[in-house]
Length: 164
Image 1 (spheres, rainbow, N blue to C red):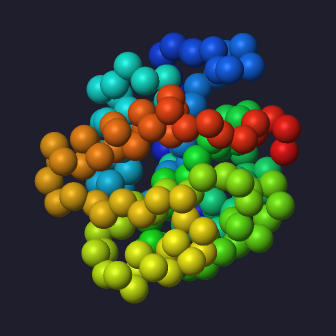
Image 2 (tube, rainbow, N blue to C red):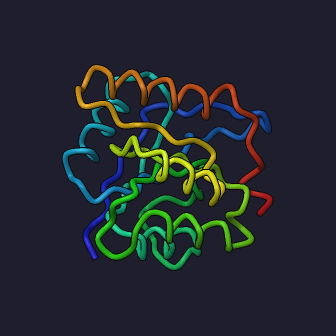
């Protein structure tokens, strides 16, 4: 098991329930460079985000079940999922997330370098909420991530994670 990477917010925001808390993203990614890119986007923004990164499917599942303490008391508001993982492919993880009653409504956004229609179709058949094709250049990736975080953290109405 590799140690988790966390990016802590500097400020808290009040959500619709009046509860001050960060918007929590679980980033499932085995490539340290991609984890660092997400950390950089979060670090450069004024968004109230907390990103917890794990590098394998087993750690992601343990975290979602509450069996792995990664230093955050909050369950994620959404999952940013890479499809190529060392211990399981992202499709298997997505299927397992959807089979867990407490995570069925958890938004899962696939972020993949694959443009294959087969991959895209399979992700949506397994109930991914979005499939984003990972841009090759940092400025484009930064833009995609910023828009994604803005949408899920501010525009989308999400299920109450504390009521699960």
